[in-house]
Image (tube, rainbow, N blue to C red; front, side):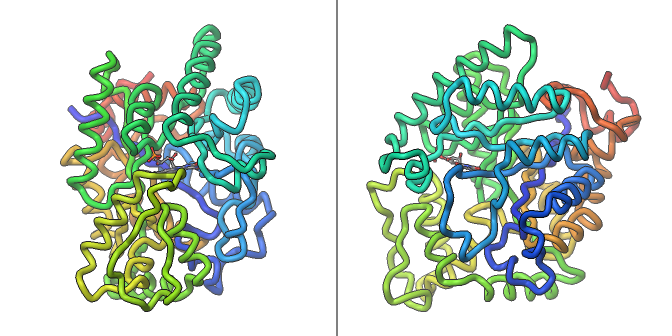
Amino acid sequence: MSPIPLLFAEFHHSGDHEGAWRLPGSAVDRLADPSYYVERTRLARDGGFDAVFFADFVGYDPIVRDVVRWPFEPTTLAAHLFASVPDIGVVVTGSTVFATVDQLYRSFSTLYDLSGGRIGWNIVTTGAPATAHAFGGGVVEQHDARYETADTVVDELSRRWAEQGRRPLFAQAGASERGREFAARHAEVIFTATPHKQAAAAYRADIRQRAMMIGRDPDEIRVLPGVLITVGETDDDAVALREHLNSLVTVGAARHMLSAYGVSLPAAGLDSPLDAVAFDPAHNGIRSRAAVLAELAESLGPSATWRGLVDRIAGSRGHLALTGTADKVAAVMNEWIDDEACDGFVVKFSHNPGGAEDVVRAVAPRLTARGVGRGAGWPGQAVRSGELRSEVRSSSSATAEAIASGASSWT
Ligand SMILES: Cc1cc2nc3c(=O)[nH]c(=O)nc-3n(C[C@H](O)[C@H](O)[C@H](O)COP(=O)(O)O)c2cc1C
């Protein structure tokens, strides 16, 4: 009896691929247009997604010059989305490091009440130097120490919300040793970047084991790997689209992408040989993705260039990347679910608008038809208005088979 797999949609303004904003049909003219975000969220809701997710790194990031990602502050955006699309979950990032307990309590309690409980909080331990700068200091607390702070913050907020019998869904993306410990302790939904099935299965098993060790029911935790989807009418179309998107990535965007994981693009540039990917040992940001990058670099073979590595991680940033027909993409996703490598996915769209519509039209029905995501399968669930956290918890005990047959245990 497998629980209902979940489908989350991760939205970046122009799509996840760093070249997407340069496509002729991109919506760069709608950067500050709230109706664009409402439209994207409705699309996800209609596609059967359980929630939309907005990443955030809190501070101003100069990458805005090379790639368009996060123009709006996400908690403010979430309030607007709930007013217009009340029947989907919205998960937004809130830094446990660059905010006080009271601030977080106030923001997320407000969002909880505004939305009738449909808010999720991505409990991150922001490590970006730009964020530290935005908060008046140049120094980011050390990696593991940030998780200590985060434990204290989340414990205190859990206590406050437990007293009130309500709280947002907690999502997290812990991948380092300390990050996994934190995620297994607090999160109900865990995002992860695992580029192949074995890595995903091993990550999920590890998280479940850690949860059991601290007395949590592992079925309370849903592990959702990110998947970058580039879909086409034929495999060749999809590959051509992906290659075109790769060709639109600027050198600045490539450099930034690598530096986020502690890797410097050599002065010789993108076409120089990828002989050694050296990681800065003092890198204080996201650590775990370095290992994913090293493995991807290795897999490219001896004649690889830096461009080859950038082409591989563009958009996906080390997540699973699927390029092909809707049939092919959905088959791999369903196989990961069947093989218990994950409990659903965080879908990343190659480009937006366009790629997201293609996924909703062609890929999502091939998933929802077999009970993935709550949107399509639940009898009488055209409108979802309960607490997101309760829905996610119930989906672990209800089964996809029961939903598909219409015999819902949902109340
Ligand atoms: C799907 C996904 C989304 C993430 N979103 C954010 C985010 O919005 N803000 C952030 O600071 N970190 C984000 N992260 C990074 C994680 O919070 C975390 O720093 C990282 O996955 C692992 O950190 P660690 O290796 O340092 O434990 C995200 C990671 C993943 C896999």
